[in-house]
Amino acid sequence: MASLTAERVETQHGAKRSMTRRNPSRASHIANPNLASAGRSKIDWAEGQMPVLGQIRRRAAKRRPLKGMRLACCLHVTTETAHLMLTLKAAGAAVTLCASNPLSTQDDIAASLVKDFGISVYAVRGEDRDTYYDHIHAVLARSPHITMDDGADLVSTIHKQPHRFGQDIIGGTEETTTGVIRLKSLDAQGKLRYPVIAVNDADTKHLFDNRYGTGQSTIDGILRSTNRLLAGSVFVIAGYGWCGKGLAQRAKGLGASVIVTEIDPIKALEAVMDGFQVMTMKQAASRGEFFVTVTGCSNVVTAEHVARMKDGAVVANSGHFDVEIDLEGVKRIAARRQQMREHITQFTLKDGRRVNVLGEGRLVNLACAEGHPPGVMDMSFANQALSAEYLVQHSRRLEPHVYSVPKEIDREIARLKLAALGVSLDRLTPEQQKYLSSWELGT
Image (cartoon, rainbow, N blue to C red):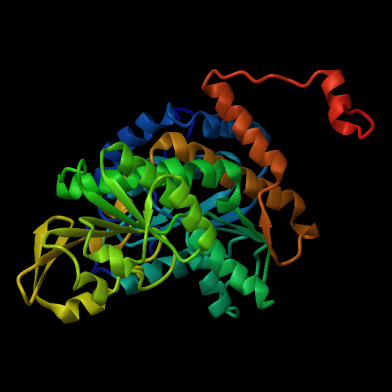
């Protein structure tokens, strides 16, 4: 960290949350540069928990594999993301960052990236929709060679405005399940303009970030905002993908009785075999005390479901976009709405029952807490950094499709993580290698 040169760039001082629009002449748009000192302390604290990314950064600083590349990044502006930005910069890239969610930005981190490290950041926690897209446009206006997405908003914007953005693009990466779904839709329609690596689908990403990261950070967001006891409660989870599995494990470990809702018969069967009750959301609505959506789909919890919930029920979303809870429908059936705590909006129904929605229906782990721990984002962002290098090396041979992270990158990240944890592996002997590669040997 100390070897990185601190630079100053122009910022918009005292930007009002959700109100101040970006000035196009500004090199960055952040809430308050005076928060930089607090942000720098958090960045320093996380460094020791991200050894894989640290090794990649040290190697990249010597080799400069991204020299001359312009990267547009639309990611959650958090402590962990800061280390990815510093790694990309060390690799020689010109990096510009905007937020991938209006409520996920940590303003002190944004301030430190701008003030201490000279990275252009367009992100203000609580920014309105217009400002959010102003920021995306500002990042894309830098004519990037590579897009780095968390939800595919950069890719979506480029494809909606092809004459305005994306002329220099050689490739992109995507961090989330939701983003990969959007990209595969573009790909299936033959409309994807450039190759994109689905970082989310790497084993060292979804098996760990989605399961352990989302599982822990979602619970963290719920507990920080409500201070409610989970033990003895009924905890309803919509979706049993990797995020849902991790969340179910954590909720069960804290003493909750877990119910899973699903549309996929294989995942539903897996949830049953893992010891959880499985039923429809309509059935679960009258039983649950906590509800969390992790599906990547829209209108998973509707007004009809909320109308069945117990007094005091807590509803949260841990999917990428704020579409999983039908908040407009909930507003229509509510007699009253009030802010109970910083991140809790309470809807009182006509019969007096109260239902509490966390974080405005946005990502509860980031809207109400700090997101995933550095130790798990270490692997996710290592995939991002190495995938960007891969695109520079191989983009000319890649067609406009969605690609998996190359297995050699996935395995290298796993090896680096194990080494950092002090874990050793066995190796195949020559005899074992011969056995596994032959068909003649047997009983």
